[in-house]
Image (cartoon, rainbow, N blue to C red; front, side):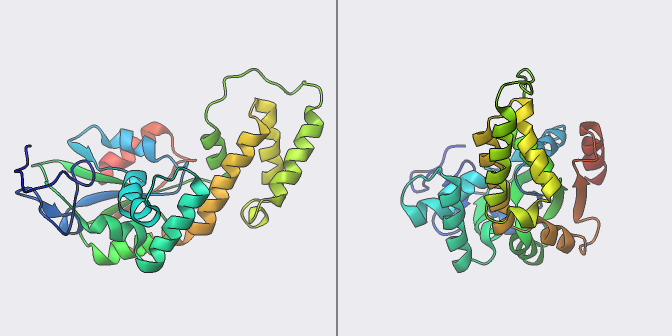
Length: 264
């Protein structure tokens, strides 16, 4: 589609801000039938997107892209890659816009195509989910969840290295890692002592201690900024035709795909 000279390029691929020129046929996402994936990092949203890809599907620019364009850029005036700084900036945005990402997404426009499904990845936490559900009645939600310990393992990714359990000094290294994990802010509220020991034991699978600490910090930071349990509890109050709840720790890939296709 070629825009006339008076219409600027979209702020994101296929999306335009609510203020300013837009292409002919553009409609607000706020009034569009949108499938929204809900969940924090490591719950399996990529798996869900893969399952949705069997039909006419357009995946909108993801959460990170919308965050960069609508929140981070205007607030920081530059690109920001550090996750802790990004969390702080998005928290500042939410102070001004209580709906957070839902409010940012709902302010954008797109050009719908006949028969396609629009999908967004994704919303997090009670405030975003409640704002979206109460403000945009056309939106439907796929809530994905998994235990935090499993999320850390997924963030570490598949490890194909050989088992390093017999390496000299690894026991001492594991004890140092366990102490460092215990010292992370909020670790005791999110993880049990058994969970922390299991995280420390991941060095026996070849994961460097620094990577284990880094991925655990991500999970803890998200817990501090977005409460997935509260979001899930709220979504459970919506009519079943508006929300699908998927435990990606209990469901195999084929089951996720089957449940999604049946619900759609």
